[in-house]
Amino acid sequence: MSARARRAPAARARANGRPAAGVAPARLDPRMFMPRDLMREAERAQRRAYAPYSRFPVGAALLADDGTVIHGCNVENASYGATICAERNAAHHAIAQGLRRFTAIAVTAREGNGAPPCGMCRQVLHEFSPRMRVIWRSASGRLIERRLDELLPDAFVLKREAR
Image 1 (cartoon, helix red, strand yellow):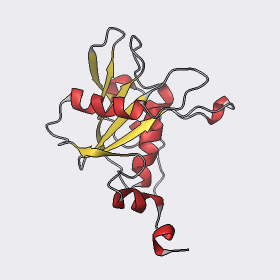
Image 2 (cartoon, helix red, strand yellow; image 1 turned 135 degrees about the horizontal axis):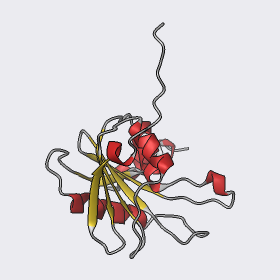
Image 3 (cartoon, helix red, strand yellow; image 1 turned 120 degrees about the horizontal axis):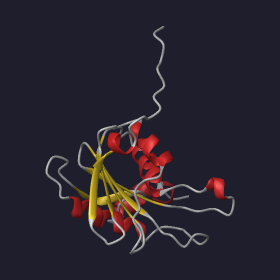
């Protein structure tokens, strides 16, 4: 096998001028970004959703504190429990890349449907950044923004005992 063929898929993608899976080519300033810019990234992610059962494609764009934008989309499975939401998909991609602190997430679904994160996604995101901004569209298409701790006021927090 040639050295090029042995190279990891992400390295091949970068060498060919494409971003690695799950990473948007954009970087945004986490202190000064516009919600509509992050929503555009979520729309890009939505195009990759795999939703043959619900026909409800969802995209998410997660903004890390360092300005990295991570894409996520929902991926359904015939065994419904194996399905993953776009927000958790983005969070898992970010965590796998070593990112742990987030400024905001934008979530989009098909037109005419609001798509705030579900409770499970809120809990997963809360583990890392409880005060992050959450952006989604109302059913009429207007951008809505709330802090995560407002959407999940009584989040489960596991208290670790001192050893």
